[in-house]
Length: 476
Image 1 (cartoon, one colour):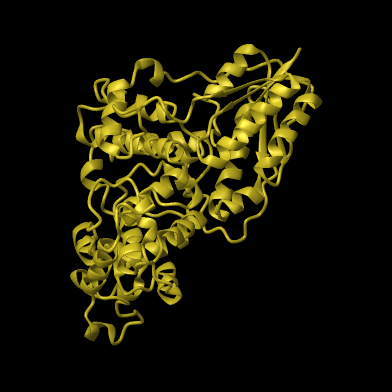
Image 2 (cartoon, one colour; image 1 turned 45 degrees about the horizontal axis):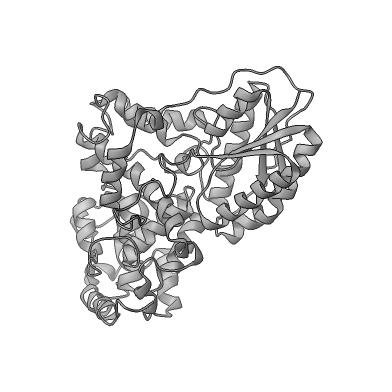
């Protein structure tokens, strides 16, 4: 009997997987995963993300095996090699169809188009399905027929158009009759430079489900209830910590939305403020997927706001190194950067603070920071990372004017009032009184192995404002 190949990518799960669900309805299926290490490295992904991904593939293989679905793994250096590798596998395994879920960054779109074209040439049925988003890019447009370039009107359109059908969670496949084929052995390489602790970031659907349950369990006495008030405080565990699992599809956005509706009277836009604030973050993820498609220049190292490409960024390698290594003299910035390097993750509020510090205080090209984040983040995902960086640098979709410049000390006093997070990651300052940790005076630094600020906040702010004011919006 002919089989269907299901090509897994950033959808490492068997529950609520659109391609797997529809393929299994045709008959027996065989899973495929292509390791494109060279391409991943060219895209900037580092050891933390790749280790987590490979552990996720292992967990996927185990889940599929329980349903007698083999998972075949192959090495392909680059995306260009995917069409030939998949067609060869289809011929070898006697497959008559290939199903996969769409991805939206430019290189991924081109890869998938090449696969579809090659499949048609070979007479192989191939289907690319919508799974990672509620609406395919191009479905939600402005009144002028354009892609949304600002989040708030996009979110309003999203909530107005969402339906029960689009929120439906699909069942995993039934156990199929055994095939005379064994899964490939794990192809997970050793990543000696990874900083991710596998105990804190266990991979797979079960781990993702546990993380969602921790966030929502016991509502209203749960982190989700307090999310709106506590999500910006890095010393607290106030966020869902689901971003790595969403980035690689170990859990679906639909599963998250359904879990919210189950405890929020069936609503996503009204009801509990904590839950609706978290839903908004999930919609942000989709918004950036649409931006990557509607404005493909952002996938080519270009600014969303064309006129900002004329910015005269500073070439300051010593300042860049201080930022990367967490020794800027601004305790909250340094604590956040050390957290990133040590754990492969950074609290979302601090992603904004550190990104704005690099691009505004140091006036260093946001693309340098974008690359550094992607190299270290366990949840590194192009669209969300690029969108966040451009938002912070005022080159992206932020509707607020360019003069939004966070004061790191004020942010520290507001969101880490007792300096707990700072003391954890900048232990040189732990001996100071809590209120003194935010901006230690020079006399306090005399006996501490901690640098003075590398830039004055007021002077840096004026420099950034002058740089942006000099731009013409007619440029580009």
